[in-house]
Length: 425
Image (cartoon, rainbow, N blue to C red; front, side, top):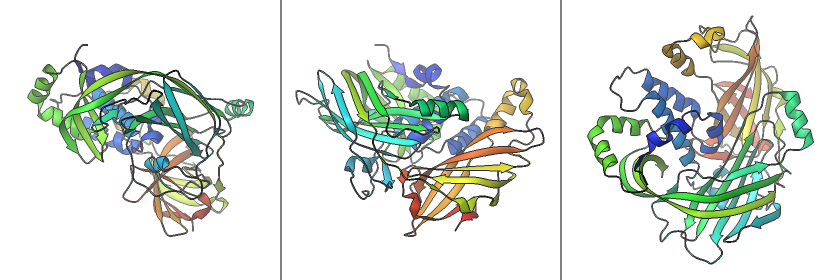
């Protein structure tokens, strides 16, 4: 096999990944990553080894890798499998459910479905995979990781949901399957789905795979305590001779790749191993959900993004809070000729992409716990006079743990602040 430098290999395939396909799965703050990248691009350094295009590739790879990171958390009340404690902190309102109508088709693999949880727009399922003959996948699971999978997932859609999508128009989705080693004999799969159209619970999940590739970390070239991978880019720029030497000495199946491991971004030399991994899993997503609409917030005003907003609605589930707001004068992209984007210069495009569109929320729970979130922005269109409606989708995290997902019971929320303005409380 030809020696591969991962940034070159992935450039064409990964660089155009839609930000929405990685945001919810990774916990990476896409707005902050985008801001860091744009600062880097606009820094005026002409001797960068990695182009702006390749910097985006690094972030895309980072997103895929971070999904496999494990987290130490507290267990939720009710039915709860400890495996879910490695995916998110906090307590989903209804705990974790066992799923139903579980089916497995595989000549070589056994699958144990550990459960499913979620809310109206988010779903997480977990299952363990072992060899039928009891053999190991690896001699030791130390220093092994997955950089994504070939697994394909599908969730059925009811006639009602299809009609709802037709009526509502816009829709945002992201989904995927990640693997990580539990021990030498066991690979754990995490299936996640985010769909703004909702209607996930009660549907049928199908996951299929034919082969999988995992990587042994042979050497760590660089590490830092961040999740943006910009340090890896700087290290490569400042150590061109070392990178060239490493690239020239790569053995068969070796690559140079950034990973996120134990709270650190790392640039490593890794060896890949591909094995047959054929199975089909089916399960009914029979979890329960709790949602709360905060009617007291309707009509509240707040200032953010250079604009005065009025709240139309706030709805919270166990994993996501959504807020809709309107304005008579949307100034988020003031100064940009949005009707002439095809003629923008690269500098104008970079400036547009560097505009911050996210909002910060602070949630206080009944027990005093503070929960935070960074909301991703969606705009349904701005009229010529500046009137528009916008929405934000906030994923939760706890103070000091902003790369970790957090689950909560929306009925336990006692106050909500948005960019410092109290909307509920």
